[in-house]
Length: 183
Length: 88
Image (spheres, each protein chain N blue to C red):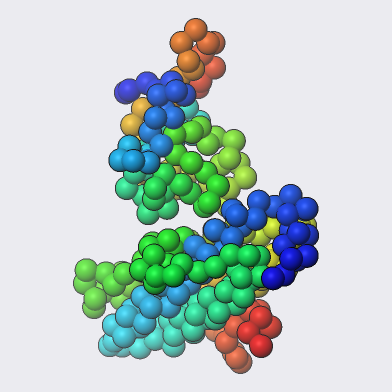
């Protein structure tokens, strides 16, 4: 048990139960997003879909990596994942990124993708706000994930034509920010 | 539009089948059907049945997200208290 690690967080004034719940629900959002993005990616067909396929895949894998990075911290803080996967799915911090009614509507798929990322950006901003200056390890983790979620939102936002968002296509390995937590 | 006192608002906490209402800037919103307000709770910290005007100032989002839910009333002070709520 990371007893002192937990004690430091509590002594800094963080509500540990609340923080654990936030991390569990956000981890659930990541894993469910990974699942739903698999379906979305499979339906990105045709010329329009092909243009999005790679970027959707990068976001999908990076969201799975976010789940992997969050789990150790949950247990370090004395928390745990729900025993049943159904319960884990149902506690997700973000709505399911479900396939639109018309699966050939690439614009509609893009809107699902960008809304999923926006929910994640808000979620990790909140975790950062809760932990900044208090729980340095969780803050570092949440900030790293936030960097990647912001980039995901930017990609999908640009594809929707919402305006420049200052980001180029990711080059190199996936999870440039979260990778250090995945050793 | 229906007027809610804080006590009446508190009864709409989203638990045990009760609808989930929140107040912000004098308006009362029904968040019962919102995915982000399941079981009357939001982000492990906020509970339905409360005035969240102050909490919104620290939130990672603005009041624009309230456009996604329906307004069901106005929040008024308890009987006998001075009415400091914004005019509808």
